[in-house]
Length: 261
Image (cartoon, rainbow, N blue to C red; front, side, top):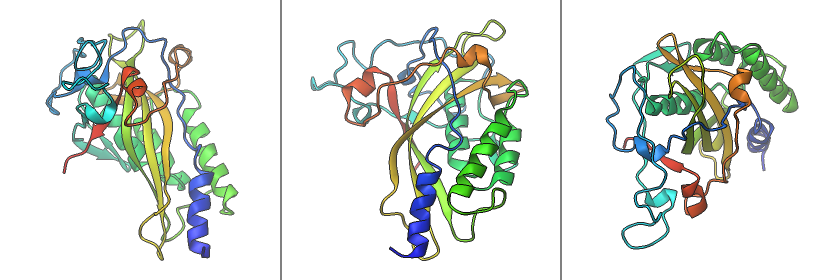
C-alpha cells in the first residue's frame, strides 16, 4: 500500500465519527418514511404531512409474493431538488417531511469533511440560531480529525484527497414541539458509505460501508435548519441496524433513498 492509499484509508477512519449531529425522538406520531413515497418532489406548503402509516405496503409486512418486506423490496424515498445554493450547501427544500429528508441528505453528501473553514461556512448557512455551540463543536471535531492524520488543525483538504459520502437509506420521525406545528421538527437517521480517493487512485475499492448518523432539523425562516436544542435532543431514540435485506430494518421504518438516473 503506497503512501497516498494509506493516507486515504487513515483519513476515512479518522473522520468516521466527525460531525455526528445528536438528534432526537421520543416519537410523537412517528412519520413512516413510506408515507412519503410517491409524493411529487415539488410538493410544498405550510401544512406538514399528516398521513402516518404503521406498517409497510401491507398490514402483514410482506410483499405480494408473501415474502417478508425489506427496504430493498420497498419503494424508495425520492429526493426533492434544491432550488438554491449558499456557502457550499444546497438550500430551498420544500416545507414537507420529504423536504427535511432531502435537506439532510444533501448536506451530508456535500459536507467539507476535512476543511474546517469551508465546513464552518456550510454550517452557518443551515444551522439554527437556537443551536447554541453547535457549529463550534462540529468544527472542533474536524480539527481533531485533521490532527489525527498529521495535518495542521486548521486548513483545507490536502491536494488531491477527496472524501465523499453516499446516503443509502433513511429513518424518519417527527418530534414533539410546543412552539411549532407537528411535522416542523424532524429527526433523520442516515445509513451511508464513505469513500476516499487520491490523485493516484481515482476509485475507492475499500470504502467504509454502512455508517450511521442522525440529525435534527426544524423549519425556521423559510428553510430546514440543523439544531441541537435540549428539548429536542432529549427525545432521541436509536434505530435497529440498517441492512437492505432486513425485515427488522423495514419494520423500524428504514427506507432506501432514490437517486435520479
